[in-house]
View 1 (cartoon, rainbow, N blue to C red):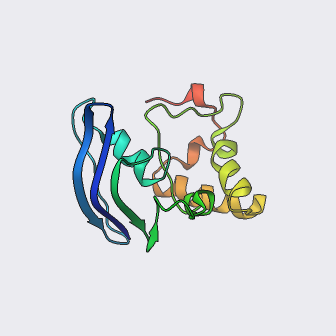
View 2 (view 1 turned 30 degrees about the vertical axis):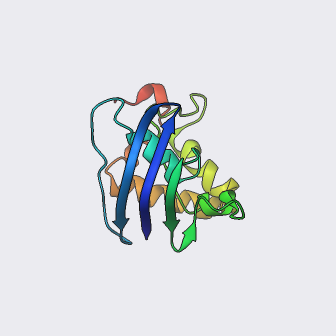
View 3 (view 1 turned 90 degrees about the horizontal axis):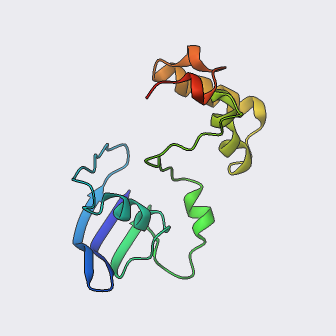
Length: 139
Protein backbone atom coordinates (compact mmCIF):
# COMPACT_ATOMS: atom_id res chain seq x y z
CA UNK A 1 0.00 0.00 0.00
CA UNK A 2 1.14 3.54 -0.76
CA UNK A 3 0.08 6.42 1.45
CA UNK A 4 1.00 10.04 0.71
CA UNK A 5 0.21 12.84 3.15
CA UNK A 6 0.57 16.54 2.31
CA UNK A 7 3.41 15.92 -0.17
CA UNK A 8 5.09 19.11 -1.32
CA UNK A 9 8.01 19.74 -3.62
CA UNK A 10 9.43 23.04 -4.69
CA UNK A 11 12.52 24.27 -6.46
CA UNK A 12 13.24 27.75 -5.15
CA UNK A 13 10.02 29.73 -5.59
CA UNK A 14 8.50 27.20 -8.02
CA UNK A 15 5.93 24.97 -6.30
CA UNK A 16 5.77 21.70 -8.23
CA UNK A 17 3.67 19.61 -5.82
CA UNK A 18 1.27 21.28 -3.40
CA UNK A 19 -0.12 19.18 -0.56
CA UNK A 20 -0.82 15.91 -2.39
CA UNK A 21 -2.78 13.33 -0.40
CA UNK A 22 -3.48 9.87 -1.78
CA UNK A 23 -3.81 6.28 -0.75
CA UNK A 24 -3.25 3.41 -3.16
CA UNK A 25 -4.25 -0.03 -1.95
CA UNK A 26 -2.48 -3.26 -2.87
CA UNK A 27 -3.47 -4.49 -6.36
CA UNK A 28 -5.14 -1.15 -7.13
CA UNK A 29 -4.22 0.34 -10.52
CA UNK A 30 -3.80 4.10 -10.64
CA UNK A 31 -3.02 6.35 -13.59
CA UNK A 32 -1.29 9.69 -13.00
CA UNK A 33 -2.20 12.04 -15.84
CA UNK A 34 -1.67 15.72 -16.57
CA UNK A 35 -0.05 18.11 -18.99
CA UNK A 36 3.69 18.36 -19.46
CA UNK A 37 5.32 20.07 -16.49
CA UNK A 38 2.46 19.40 -14.07
CA UNK A 39 4.60 17.33 -11.67
CA UNK A 40 3.75 13.74 -12.64
CA UNK A 41 7.36 12.58 -12.90
CA UNK A 42 8.38 14.58 -9.83
CA UNK A 43 5.60 12.88 -7.85
CA UNK A 44 6.73 9.41 -8.95
CA UNK A 45 10.38 10.25 -8.28
CA UNK A 46 9.43 11.34 -4.75
CA UNK A 47 7.58 8.05 -4.22
CA UNK A 48 10.67 5.96 -4.89
CA UNK A 49 13.12 8.33 -3.22
CA UNK A 50 14.84 9.52 -6.39
CA UNK A 51 13.70 13.04 -5.51
CA UNK A 52 13.56 14.47 -1.98
CA UNK A 53 10.20 15.99 -1.03
CA UNK A 54 10.19 19.48 0.46
CA UNK A 55 7.52 18.45 2.97
CA UNK A 56 4.99 15.72 3.66
CA UNK A 57 5.13 11.99 4.27
CA UNK A 58 5.31 8.98 1.97
CA UNK A 59 4.71 5.44 3.23
CA UNK A 60 5.11 2.29 1.15
CA UNK A 61 3.89 -0.84 2.92
CA UNK A 62 4.20 1.03 6.21
CA UNK A 63 7.79 2.14 5.59
CA UNK A 64 8.38 5.90 5.60
CA UNK A 65 10.23 6.58 2.34
CA UNK A 66 11.54 9.98 3.35
CA UNK A 67 13.00 8.73 6.66
CA UNK A 68 16.80 9.18 6.53
CA UNK A 69 17.26 5.82 8.30
CA UNK A 70 15.41 3.83 5.61
CA UNK A 71 17.53 1.78 3.22
CA UNK A 72 16.17 3.04 -0.10
CA UNK A 73 17.88 0.29 -2.09
CA UNK A 74 16.00 -2.36 -0.10
CA UNK A 75 12.75 -0.45 -0.52
CA UNK A 76 13.31 0.06 -4.26
CA UNK A 77 13.84 -3.68 -4.78
CA UNK A 78 10.06 -4.05 -4.52
CA UNK A 79 9.21 -1.04 -6.69
CA UNK A 80 9.30 -0.45 -10.40
CA UNK A 81 9.19 2.66 -12.52
CA UNK A 82 9.03 3.01 -16.27
CA UNK A 83 10.80 6.14 -17.44
CA UNK A 84 9.52 8.31 -20.29
CA UNK A 85 12.40 7.15 -22.44
CA UNK A 86 12.73 3.44 -21.95
CA UNK A 87 16.52 3.34 -22.35
CA UNK A 88 16.66 -0.33 -23.23
CA UNK A 89 20.13 -1.69 -23.86
CA UNK A 90 20.30 -1.75 -27.69
CA UNK A 91 22.84 -4.60 -27.80
CA UNK A 92 20.59 -6.88 -25.71
CA UNK A 93 17.45 -8.78 -26.69
CA UNK A 94 14.07 -8.15 -25.07
CA UNK A 95 14.69 -11.20 -22.88
CA UNK A 96 18.14 -10.02 -21.78
CA UNK A 97 16.77 -6.54 -20.98
CA UNK A 98 13.95 -8.08 -18.92
CA UNK A 99 16.01 -10.53 -16.88
CA UNK A 100 18.93 -8.30 -15.96
CA UNK A 101 17.29 -6.42 -13.05
CA UNK A 102 15.61 -9.45 -11.41
CA UNK A 103 18.91 -11.32 -11.53
CA UNK A 104 20.96 -8.43 -10.13
CA UNK A 105 18.49 -6.85 -7.71
CA UNK A 106 16.39 -9.79 -6.56
CA UNK A 107 19.19 -12.35 -7.04
CA UNK A 108 16.95 -14.66 -9.11
CA UNK A 109 18.67 -17.40 -11.03
CA UNK A 110 18.72 -16.98 -14.80
CA UNK A 111 16.16 -19.77 -15.11
CA UNK A 112 13.78 -18.11 -12.62
CA UNK A 113 14.18 -14.71 -14.29
CA UNK A 114 13.50 -16.20 -17.73
CA UNK A 115 10.30 -17.85 -16.45
CA UNK A 116 9.10 -14.53 -15.01
CA UNK A 117 9.98 -12.66 -18.22
CA UNK A 118 8.16 -15.22 -20.38
CA UNK A 119 5.09 -15.00 -18.14
CA UNK A 120 5.06 -11.19 -18.36
CA UNK A 121 5.56 -11.17 -22.13
CA UNK A 122 2.80 -13.74 -22.55
CA UNK A 123 0.51 -11.61 -20.35
CA UNK A 124 0.94 -8.56 -22.60
CA UNK A 125 0.85 -10.55 -25.85
CA UNK A 126 4.50 -10.01 -26.76
CA UNK A 127 6.06 -13.42 -26.19
CA UNK A 128 6.94 -13.63 -29.89
CA UNK A 129 9.24 -10.58 -29.41
CA UNK A 130 11.39 -12.31 -26.78
CA UNK A 131 14.45 -12.56 -29.06
CA UNK A 132 13.96 -9.17 -30.75
CA UNK A 133 16.27 -6.23 -30.15
CA UNK A 134 15.00 -2.75 -29.17
CA UNK A 135 15.50 -1.36 -32.70
CA UNK A 136 13.12 -4.06 -33.96
CA UNK A 137 10.27 -2.92 -31.69
CA UNK A 138 7.72 -0.25 -32.50
CA UNK A 139 6.47 2.46 -30.10
